[in-house]
Image 1 (tube, rainbow, N blue to C red):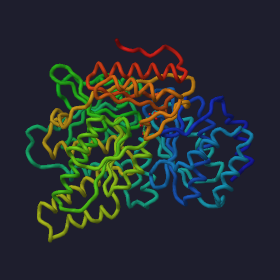
Image 2 (image 1 turned 90 degrees about the vertical axis):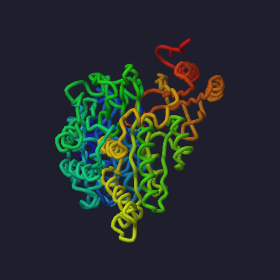
Image 3 (image 1 turned 90 degrees about the horizontal axis):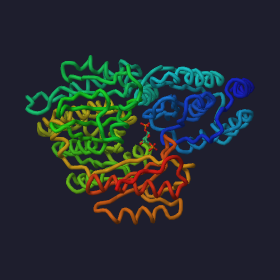
Image 4 (image 1 turned 120 degrees about the horizontal axis):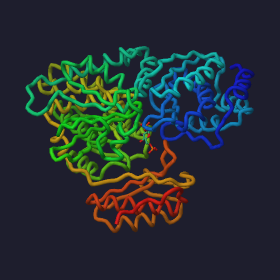
Length: 543
Ligand code: G16
């Protein structure tokens, strides 16, 4: 570690220009790009230290995912492809906020506290989404990494899930896959083609429309479009020529419950929408009356879990399947999973890092946030069991076929993290196998009407929650007020939590009908505004 060079660069080239405190939030640091140069320099160094501790490559992704520009952000990816360990989030926060002149002192403390061998080798895998600001921020990270004499492998513009995937490929010496864009695309495509059902279809159509949010996901979607043209007809829109995440993308569609800009006008056409860095996906369609229907992360999770459950049953294998959601999961989906599908369901805090961890407790864990962020993870011993059954001559043919289809599915899944495009291929595989159109899929259960609202407050951190964000501990009186408001509505449910990616408090409300959901969301938003020092215009409460 060249401490004097680090000190000089920190003080002269990368001083902290922001007076606000940086917090490692739901998915790393996120704020306006102009405040991020010093942070990228520091996170480059931190990634090197993390790599030294783990003796393996660490990922650094520059993205603000669903946020519009001029935001950008950064998050670190641990060697197993998972989000950074919580203890290191705290370390990252302390380094991010250290005064410019105390960087060396702070780094030395991190080295000491964590018994880091400064002479150990280190590798950082770098990637960025399509934001213009990513070019300069990437340079800042590289300067940090180089100041520590570590190796950087810069993959340039890639999706967040590709970065996670490359980290695992590199750390498994290629056992998980080839760490190249072509390797990633061809693994997905090969598995998808293998899993495809060859029976004639009455309802499933090859035609799919994809909104790529004008983000980096458009690049991968175009590659899939080309490779899969005989199997899936991908019609891409918001392909990167328009403004990133503006009136398009998974977050916009989920929150506003409307189709994105440039959406096709064909009724009942199956449409998918991904977010700015392609780690989330939701589906939607407009029916013959022009009514919009959303098939969100809950619908995707239940589709996948019910299909896997059927395959497990047919194969006769003893496998514990479970599903993990957050408080945002629609109540109707939770009822459907536990009541009808009879699959164990768990609820965690928001943030895929929590869901991923909880999903490890099952042999096969399906986890999805309602916003479309999720994947499936399989225990190694479960994969072995399935592979063995697929070739076991003592099993019946239907048992072997079901096990083989589970093997195919495992290969389509990006187990490292939620991956919009891998998820899309899983959904397409299942709809094809079931011979379902999007309307039939949507009928599996009917969502309770729900709303999500953002409330601006002076300091969103005054909101403290517990019980997977379903109860609010502070400010005083807010939970009692929410309880009182909820009690006025049939099937009412509402909770509030500070966002970890935007400077807002999020309000969720669910009720028996749309008008009530609107009213409850408005009333709870007003309570937040009044009790948590709201700023700007007062939330609107419909009459
Ligand atoms: C990130 C996280 C998700 C989380 C979302 C919203 O998604 O990876 O797990 O649900 O932020 O978080 P919050 O409600 O705290 O703002 P993305 O796609 O923006 O990276």
